[in-house]
Length: 531
Image: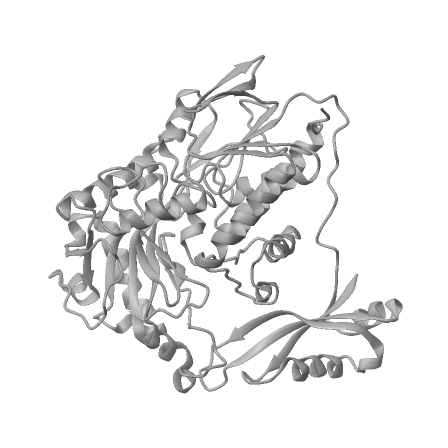
């Protein structure tokens, strides 16, 4: 164990040494008392533009472990930190076959990594290509080429997060979160993600980190089949026995379905096999694009050009009395709005930024919550609701994968236009569109309410030149694949729904943690390969 000193405030220009000295002073310690000191977490407090500062948690390892306990008892701003990693319990049953993993996004990746480290030799099936293959097909599409429905922004090695900002923030409080960060650093991510309150890898770094993790899994005996779609599975005595794919059939002892929230044909297959699933609320809306300098000014005021401050980012929400919410999501400072379709004749948007976040524009999803009241009670109704919006967008823009768009001014007045000082970043092109033709009236009404509220909180949301690009429909899974306390399906006991697509995560970090937790449960119930 070690000691964490919280709420250590510093000016934006103070050095690490100055911050550590402040932490020691706060608990009346000197450098002689400690064997190690480092910044554990740093967050930016920009709530008051005339008092912008950093707030740190500082890690201290004392020579006298008894003193750590005494300090914690005396000071409410101190706490012990436990080891975030716990060894799994490994089944001693006879080996019954290899574990299959469907999907190689964050959940499948960390599940496979963890299994491979403990003697299991998982077989991974990923419908998309490896990072390099996938990057080529994505760039081809962004440049005006054809859409590859199996290898795109949604499908392929690393999942949808590979073409994103690489955010590693999460609301979950799980000790494995720190382990995930350390694992990313182990495989090449910048060390600063360990100390930032809002860490991000960036799409550029994430790509080679994922390749390093994949190679480690293979070195430990795992197998990864890219460009391989799972089409069906067979059961014996109520359990999955064989996975059927576009590259052949494979016998397994258990199977993890970590397919991501865009695997609609997979959801349809599982529905036909009567796996227990339920519809789940999600959100739809637009990508809004501002100048990054306007976001910085809205947040930092006179400090907007400070070299000590990161590119500004925000998170805003407005909730109506009936529970309907409009909010910003997946904000990408210095990023681009990217074409993200995974089905032919549809338009989907998403946001992406590299680690430096040094692009001229900022963008984020601005979305409205939808539920069974909007799309119906059948399992696949939410999925089909989103699909219908994506198909309508394709039709409205002339069937060429350009996106419906308007300035905020055009949207609010009902006279869509693209007359703006902002250069939109969506590479397939934009076409003026009345969003009332794309979204239900309730969605447009809530977006307008959002602008009314957000413009009072941030100046840039009062800029009617901001560009709205639609639609954003892949915020989270519209389906939850039901699972028991042991993380397996109540319908099929060796079937493990996992990650964001199964309805149990909301981003890279929580999906990775869910993959680890799933691996731990499998190790508890199935022995590793011994031959």
